[in-house]
Amino acid sequence: MKIFYPVFFLFITVSLAADSLYLELSSKGEKTDLGLAAVTTDRGVPGGGDSAGAIFRTLKNDLEAADLFKVIVEGPPSSQGTAPWSRLGADMLCVGSIGKALFGRVQFEGQLLDVNTGRPVLSKKFLLDEDARRVAHRWADEIVRYVTGQPGIAASRIVFVNDAAGKKDVYRVDADGENLLRLTRDNSIALFPKLSPDGEWIIFTSYRGGRPSIDRMRSDGRDRTTLCRFEGLNSAAAWMPDGKSIVATLSDGRSPNLFHVDLEGRVVQALTNSSAVDTAPTVSPDGDRIAFTSDRPGTPQIYFMDVSGANLRRAVSGPLADSPHWSPLGHLIVFTQLEKKFFDLWTLEVATGKLSRLTFGEGDNENATWSPDGRRLVFSSTRGGRPELWVMGADGSTPRRLAQIPGRSFTPHWGQ
Image (cartoon, rainbow, N blue to C red; front, side, top):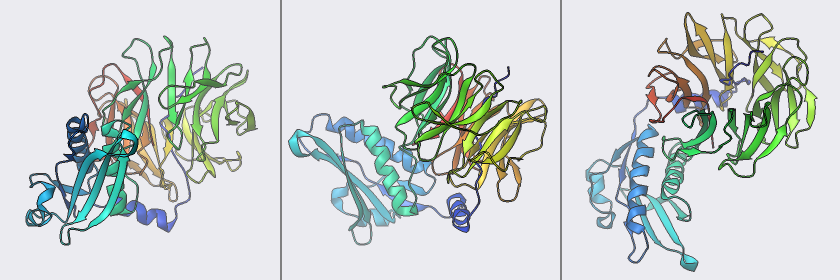
């Protein structure tokens, strides 16, 4: 039996609000000139200097990666006020300090200042109980939210499969390619990890019991349980947008079909009933529709249906199309399509059926998923000789390797 490797593709009615949001996020307008002062530390704070340096470096990288700011760092200490930064061209100044909090704890306070008045327009405090880089990511996302009205993605994470340890295990990495963490050590095969909508859980396919099951664990690898272990295939699941159930590929002695399953592993509803292979589901952000891969025509193609299984229709006609994933903005689906001898990435505009090609034969490019803000894609590409994680803009622009990760990396999923 052939199992298709999902890329994920999402399908939803486009509203004017979603369209305008996408255009705003995709626009190449002028960047905000943002001053970034060195993070200060109160005396007597253990490890304060190291944390200050880590927060500053991470914050600089996050703000530059957001592609919204021209970050100015060669300026005086924040104690000298905002006037010198204004003369450097900054519109706003980001300052931060590490100090003591209640009960012997340590906190970071970040402020965004209007350089003309010197007054804070945004202020947040974060306890440094967690990794300093994580705090910097969260502060960067707050700055992006203030400027754009939309949450940033610096604190988001990517889960994927990698074989550097000899078997295929689930790994997690920060959106900037740092903090690589191996989550499974089964001496077996793990496939298709997906982060829950709140980023707290991961579902994935596991062969550690000898035959495939759909397992669930926390995003740090703890509290692992098996959700689905029916006869035959249990694979390629996707979360419903509310995080309270999944859509899974199950065969149970028949051809693989799609089923709605709760988090106790109980089948709520059969969604397809085909003699073909139906797999790689992805659910629209509003939870109303599902896109998936089926070989009903003889080769894998992308199909749409209502979340109830009704109104089935074919979405793409090509030599081979697979692994759809729905944009969190709802108007696009990204998928993999065979082009001559390579797999390339395309988007489908759900409302109009318009196709746009994103990659052009630089090796095989597969299994793309969207960043939580819908502005970027992560995917697996062999353009460097082996499957690695790459990131690019939603329009295919500025592709770059995410990180130098040993081994081969497959089926990434970008979540909170």
